[in-house]
Image 1 (cartoon, helix red, strand yellow):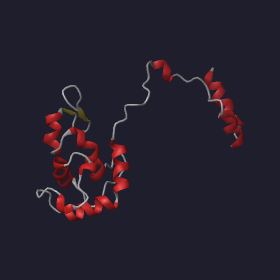
Image 2 (cartoon, helix red, strand yellow; image 1 turned 45 degrees about the vertical axis):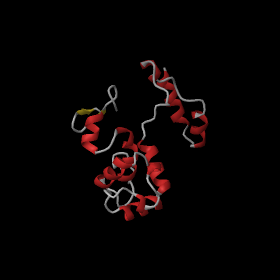
Image 3 (tube, one colour; image 1 turned 60 degrees about the vertical axis):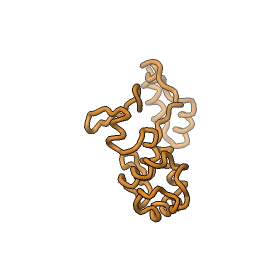
Image 4 (cartoon, one colour; image 1 turned 90 degrees about the vertical axis):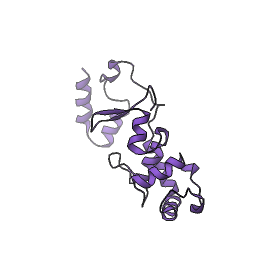
Length: 150
């Protein structure tokens, strides 16, 4: 998110630039994966961290942009963060989960992108499909797949 990158809200059919993300979530766009890691995302199937909601996450990530920046000792947290002790306890008890959820919330840009619609054309069954059909005792499945190729 920035001047050239935006967040699309498909449900509301709106686009948000950096200022829009800050207005909506109370944090900078770079903190969104960390925010989603602790509050969860039911659409993507991860629960977040117990006790964390949108208000507490916004308060924490407005002070500490990423999970690694959050002090382990709640007494060192910014005084503006309410319920620091239970938040810290739940976060650090589920630290590995939080890191996993952040990974799940992060858009991957290192995957190959189709260069042509032809990349989607059916080219017949993969080489090991015949062996799989034989193992499954389903020779007709392989024959039907070959017939589709033609």
